[in-house]
Amino acid sequence: MKRHLLALSIAALLALPGCRDNPNANLDARDQPSAAANGETDTGGSRKGDFGPPQGEPIEAVLTNPPLVPPAIDRDYPAKVVVNLEVREVDLEISEGVTYTFWTFGGTVPGSFIRVRQGDTVEFHLNNHPDSKMPHNIDLHGVTGPGGGAASSFTAPGHSSQFTFKALNAGLYVYHCATAPVGMHVANGMYGLILVEPPEGLPKVDREFYVMQGDFYTTTKYREKGHAPFDMQRAIDENPTYVLFNGSEGALTGDNALKAKVGESVRMYVGNGGPNLVSSFHVIGEIFDKVWFEGGTRFQENVQTTLIPAGGAAIADFHTEVPGSYVLVDHSLFRAFNKGALAIMKVEGPENPEIYSGKEVDETYLGDKAASMAPVAQAAAAAQAGTLSLEDQVKAGGALFAGTCSTCHQPDGKGLPGVFPPLAQSDYLAKGNDALINVVLNGLSGPVTVNGQDYNSVMPPMSQLTDDEVANILTYTLNSWGNPGGRVSKDEVAKVRASTERSEGAAH
Ligand SMILES: [Cu+2]
Figure 1 (cartoon, helix red, strand yellow):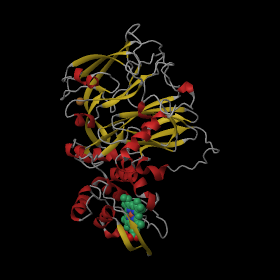
Figure 2 (cartoon, rainbow, N blue to C red):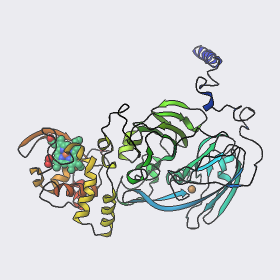
Figure 3 (cartoon, rainbow, N blue to C red):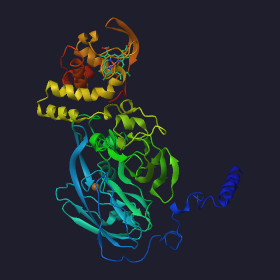
Figure 4 (cartoon, rainbow, N blue to C red):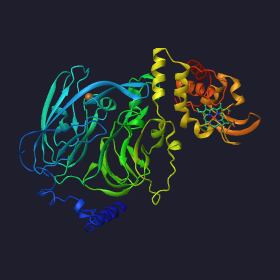
């Protein structure tokens, strides 16, 4: 009985005129390509973008490495477009001082950006580098045909394969490797984006960027220095070590930050390779004027956070009004601040106090991501070579202290009276290395007297820091602000970590 009523009311909803066919009916018609505007005869969707055989000379597709996007297509006819994509297995940095063996389309994670026009005939060549250890193939979500090309593109190391498809549907599509074990090939970085432009193109903008999220699984801890091998069990458990934009913690921060100027229109082609997580994509301090959600034909306006499924994409447009650093995050925030899902867009130009008063909040938000991590990488390399000096440790520790400890103890180490005790000339430091390591790993609470002042507060445990991070931060502390000096080693930290208990799940 109840069921019957439900079915009736759904039928009634579907019968409402207009609202199902064109949810953007009240928006600017010029921006919403209709079947007629595309010059298509609407045959019910199945052959939407078949504009006939390719015309003119074949065109070699321009492929770009992230975060670059190939130029917009300036062509009013369907062409034959040749794509040459090379698979390479390469060791690259996934975080400062941490390498990972990525499997790539074109040598980068994500893979090369491909841009074609709806109706184009794409002749696809997949070349697997002779140094590869694995066979690979490609499934493009923009392909109509079995496996999206996967079945026709299985390619052994040192071989090439070729297949051809017609790009029938406009949109922003993920491509990925689909060789077994598929999840592992994707987890190693085998994904990218292909944009199939509608015939009239997308609205013009000043800048376009290519950003793609992915989750990574290693047998090592987050930021543990050295080589990080893939961990199949963590992948199955969907418990990533890293969640990253463009395959590395440093891909879009520091000197690699995206750059724009005040008063520009910016478009981001955002993909999510997964293999497991969905992304709550957000830019701190911006509102997307338009989001072509799910990479499709329709847009939503005035969006704060857009959901990007694993194996999906979105096109996000916004306009820059105020200079400063804008932070791209997966708004599942522990991924952003504890697993790396954070990128920065630096906007330069004149202040605009009518829209925003000024005063930057970067430091508190970004923590150590705002500082240059070059000294950390240098210390990691020195430690590996067995030449780690006191100076290396102090420099690396200083970069890590910014944001990690400075939010409470302040950049000058003086703390805040009555709230956060000082580290500068603190008599607590005389308790010795083990006591200091213990405070950082396990936190401190209850009454404590520092330089004659009583405190009774809580410092949270920071066991998520690696042994060498704790060693470097404390070495920096001991050698700064007129403190007596000294040195803490990674091994000392490891010992305290092993000999003290912390609750299950307290960071690794
Ligand atoms: Cu593969």
